Amino acid sequence: MEYVIVLAIIVFVLVFWDRPIMVLTFEDGKLTQSKGNIPNGFLMGCKDIAHKQPFSGKIKVYKNRFTTKLVFSKSVPSKVKQRIHNVFPYSGNTKKRGKRA
Image 1 (spheres, rainbow, N blue to C red):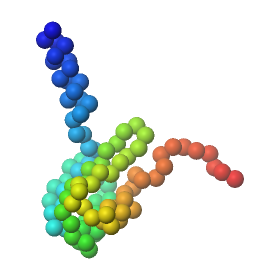
Image 2: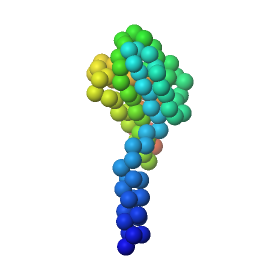
Image 3: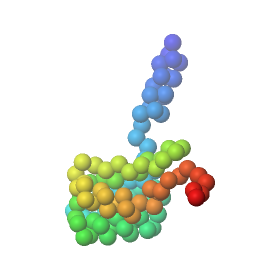
């Protein structure tokens, strides 16, 4: 019986644990914390956007088998979100398709 409870707890932790591959934390337009393997172009683009339009908040990047997704904290303005999406290097379509005529 104890093994079932321990196994249930382990499965719960694995499923619901927050595991982003990259985290960027900004405060008043300055990068205060970064975590993960962040591409240099994306990092420089985010710093440039934060310098021109100062904001505070977190940007998290999640990856699964099919897509890479950006998640922003609520304090990040929508115009800044769009600019960061534009410099994000993994936003292209990942499915391999043939050329269309």
